[in-house]
Length: 425
Ligand code: AMP
Ligand code: GLY
Image (cartoon, rainbow, N blue to C red; front, side, top):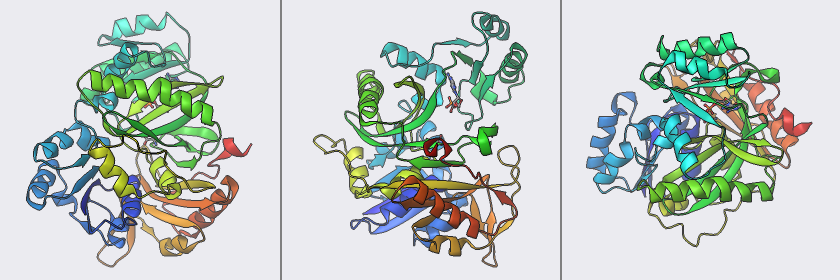
């Protein structure tokens, strides 16, 4: 089969790496891809040809057997709808179904319609009303821009002053542009966060693993929020009973609700959960795999990913048995450019990446890299590499991943030293 992967980050490198292991794959093309995906033997369309219209035109001409869309951006723009109209098989939700991620107010109203447990909320377009609403509760306040803001549109404010400033930044200063036409104020949920994934075919959902991410930039969960600085799986708090409850009270009602409302969901449904007193509540839905959770879960998956994605994209998950996993654990350490997330320093040279990849149990996933004319690998984004390792247990996976990370000679970058700390204590 000829497969196109849309995207060029660590998540898409992991998808490419796993798809490459499929006996039915004959050709892998990535738009735009990255140097790590090129090293796998994939053809890269490159950034000039990876824009929305270019991808549609390329697909119309080349007619891949499957298109896998990694990031939320192209889903939000309706790439799935365009390609489906061409009669192509696409793994990823339609624009309408992607609203579960692209509009927080849509998602919250959807949860209310389908009794999906989540934080109480209110939506405002008007700053004075939003500020007045703060008086109905006390800090901490959860203030969110409504639309897509690359994971940066959420402020957990510890005081009224901070909450008022966050409302002004979203509604007056338009810090997030049109993503901030509305502000969502939520009840604060204490607890421990987990990312749960489900493979969906529009009708049915299969549990696709749970992982725990580390959102803050620095050790001890300090510093600004990021897209994720490292992850581990399996999640120690997701017991089989809790997985079952999550599927029953969150994932399945969401799938049924989307179908009944005329927007069947096909792709990976990602439920960001807060676990408190043994109960799952939804923080948010995402409509794609997590990054770096994808790089963490796929090395443990004992299945032919291509077969699975084709089955889901063609609406045929019915009767599919639970997925098989390797025993043991997996951990990913993200290497980020100095200055990430605010203003990552781009262009610095990374050495020793090949050495890291040779470390026992380690797989290196590229996220934001480019190779210059002399063949040197340079930083091209905030999150630059993900060093994954699997092991007999979490400690072994982490030891191996950190041994790999230390092989990378990169003064321009940094990583957290305490990935997995919650599970080890
Ligand atoms: P989101 O982009 O909605 O996932 O929010 C980013 C982060 O803010 C989450 O990963 C949580 O750590 C935190 N967060 C969001 N909503 C809440 C909430 N209602 N209560 C507590 N923490 C939250
Ligand atoms: N790691 C969280 C995300 O992909 O949104």
